[in-house]
Length: 205
Image (cartoon, rainbow, N blue to C red; front, side, top):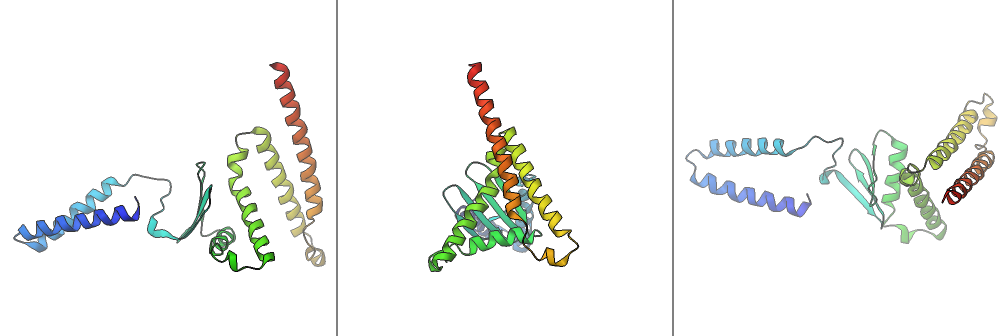
């Protein structure tokens, strides 16, 4: 229910309550009775849900053509027009912090330097690729397998790097080139697989 509609209903309840109180002999008793009835009616109307986001919990929102990011009191809510909804609890501080920064800078983008604008645009684009990945990937077994393996390669490389006993080596950046080459190798294998599958389907027709 939108905020305007909510305010209209509250006004109507207030008006009806005034009428009933004006006709009551014991106004205090009647006011309490009306409050109890409204409370019970409200409890009846609430349906169980996996999660619920009240409009009063939304602190800030960034809206684009295909998605919205809502910063909430208890986390961040990402939604797309394609039907994907992701709620990130505030306890995941790094993830929430990054999305909150993206939303916070939406009105300040014009004041950023050209280099900062490029960084902001790139960060936003990469975030959308990651957050929207389920919509693109889960419909294809090949893509699901590829993305899962690519993530395992990256997480494994990061784990190996962090487990090094040599403190000097840990100060060096994660070997992103090695990771990129492994991911590229998987991409090439995926493309070959897709081409072969398309070829078989055409021959079958």
